[in-house]
Length: 103
Length: 488
Image 1 (cartoon, each protein chain N blue to C red):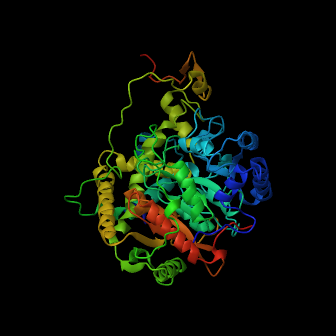
Image 2 (image 1 turned 60 degrees about the vertical axis):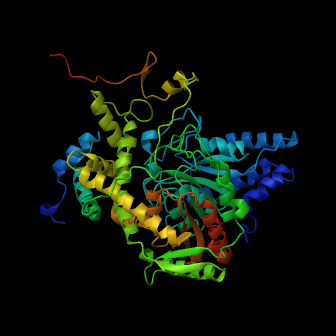
Image 3 (image 1 turned 45 degrees about the horizontal axis):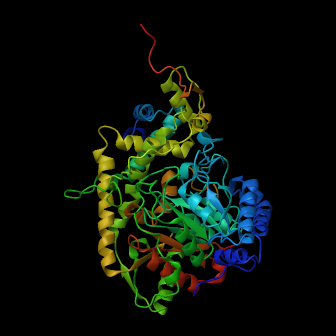
């Protein structure tokens, strides 16, 4: 496939990588542009399918909401759970700042 | 009718019976299993972790129960290997990914508890393609597993470690998970039996999710009867999995020897290629079933060919959602950054391998604004067409036959640079996954190079009993040398 008839550009790969929260280097961006384009070409049979009046299937069998009795039961031990976290503080998961600096 | 394992290797029922009667100890059975692991693991790399101490404690507990007159259960003292995407309390569960390296799950998967309650002894966690994405086990962050029939070839995947461990006689039973063929394809490439049950028959609680509407756990064994016994143990309703079917585990062993007389069996023509050794095996299998009294016919189901492209939209889409939980916050790897979004992105960029990133990218693209209807929406409709086509075929047939795989085990490196070529491995196994139907791979022939070939038996939802009957008849007609265990 030549550069011009690629289905996915490097720009688009960077956009999708941002949505997926994946840091990719330039080599990966180039490779995924080529490979995702080839994949999209492969799944084109599905995109072109005439599906008027065909309902979508999200799940092999009908899924029903499953509710249990509203009784208290022990949940996972907090210490055990937090012991697996990369960083924890005062019974919580610790993360870097989540908002920009105050103006 | 039911076959025995190779000389020197006993069936699950024979192992359990000898331990229940005290004729052999679970500890002695475990020792010979671990001895085989020590001998072959360097060549094959089936395991991410062998849990010797925990296994010895479990085996001793089984022996103690026998001495106290308590029945340890139908799998008393049977050594079993678990694919390393099934949670085990306090034992690392990695999905063969750097992003989960060192993580210790806080709970056991339901299948792990069920095996233990039946007396089985878990000996370790087996290698897989990272997050079960792949068909060769080459995508493991910890190096590939090798095929005991030819160590220059892949064992298939993604459950390659489990398949190779059973095929080399390290364990008589291993569990795998199957999303588009990850039990059946490696079973075929390793010359053993692999079963993907109907969606919802085996609990997914504690199975680390890849594509939740497709994932299903099942057994690897050397015989059909062993697979039936293992499935009876792990199946059944689990309130911890909202998609678990609320019905008792199927009864499979009782009807295993009933034969195929009068059954209507369809050969799916769309997957038969002239000159292909795998297709030739299906035709030979059909002839054997006809000789055993089944009514064989060809059937064309062209909609099944939509399965592969539909799957490679649906499974990545579900994976991109499921794998969003690996964000460097609650467990596993964290690569620091000045803010949380940068930390998330660096962690995922460095923690995931190339195939996982490729699928996350594909799935994110297919679900993103402007493309959702064209790709994900259309793939879901194609899934409906696959299900409808199966429904129509099962009006005329009790079970269907296809090759499990388009080709025999391939050499390392021969498909890694071409994702689509690798994805083609699952051509024949994907349609049943999309429909939620059961399917089994049975070793049936050897290629001219001496590599095993599997034949796939497909059945409608909850058709496990008839499927296993057909599988047992195929096994009875197959040459003994077409199935493991083998010594590499």
